Amino acid sequence: MRSIVEWEGTPFFRELDLRVESAGDGHARLAVRREAVRLRGARDGLNGGIVATLGEAAMRVCLASMLADGERAGRTRELTVAYLSGARGDVTIVEARMLRKGGRLAVGDIELIDAADGTLNAKLRVSCEVIPARAE
Amino acid sequence: MSVPDLETWRARWRTPERERLGVRGERIGDGFASFTVDLRYGDERDHDALFASAAVTHAADIAVLSAVMGHLDEHVQQQNGTASMHLNFLRPLVGVLTVEGRITSWGSHDAIVEIAAEDERGTLVLKGLSTYSLRPREPRGDA
Image (tube, rainbow over the protein chains, first blue to last red):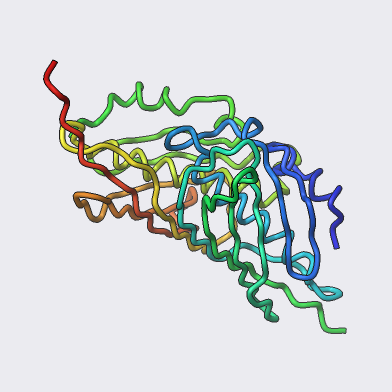
């Protein structure tokens, strides 16, 4: 399993100074500072496309925590996001939990939450491909 | 409706952050808009699927916004933000993609915008749908 330091060292995570607060057992919690995200959307909240990818990032960390030996995460196949309120907090938490990890597909539930007051900014569902271990 | 001047609209989206993602405005018209996304970074970003996803998803979001801008009558309604987005990723995101938003339905409180991304050969790599929220323009009070 990729370590937190390894995740935080990848280009997308570094671009937004995205931090992994916790990951394991089908759960992941990330944090992003508003000042680190210069792409903005309606009323100066985090841009909607970036919100969607933050959710996808949390899902990938979450999935990585559940892969069996030899299994790999494949491509994201589907993403659905409902924008409920502008993500304008100083820090936004991105929390993912696995709904079901199968042999070929994993489906996760993700929320973006204002760290200061718990306001739910967005709700996502992300499906990722799972690549099975190669048969011996 | 008032379709923005093309070069003015392109200039709006020309920022260092979008240059980093490889996103550029291409076309805008009445109810549609497109962006190009050049994913040939030539460095470690080429190997980060999330970086490509961020570029394409961001382009999809602003294609939706721009499609709405190109159809909106600002005397009657105003923009109120993306309400939802659903994307199906059909093929790997590589090379130079064109991401288009095109209005399929327009109402008093929302617009439905279809999203499609194609590669240089015209192969569909992403398909989606977005709901964009609208608000009636509030009447201005007399001085």
